Amino acid sequence: MDEKNLLDLWNTKRSQIIRAQMAPNLMLIGIFVLAAFGKFDGASDGAKYLTIGVAATTGILSMITQYATIREAEALMVDLNRLEKSSELAKKVGGSRGLLSLSAIAIVGLGIAVFSLVVWAVLG
Image (cartoon, rainbow, N blue to C red):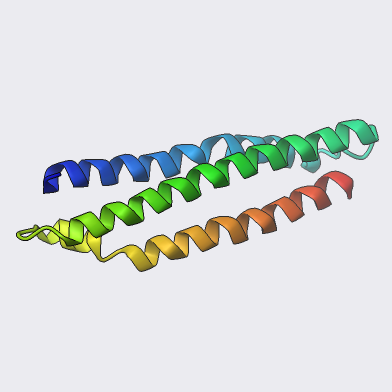
């Protein structure tokens, strides 16, 4: 692949990571609004566990998608670094592996933290 195709692929991978965050964010907004209005206080246990289960499923699937995209982007960086004559942009993107690895760690760590908060908000 040439530099332009690799950079286009890089932008596609970044967009995939962003799009993978949309469903969990909407789910969290819904849970936040319901919790803020105290709707879980009178809810049945089944409704509470369903909420937690749907939030967990949405979050886990999102993290899997994001993590897979990050792994593919790391391989793309190796290819960018192998180019003989690359632009400054290609060099910057190719040198971002540490930030990408940090993103993978943050996705998992923050996902677990947010899920803990969801459980706390729902079960109170």
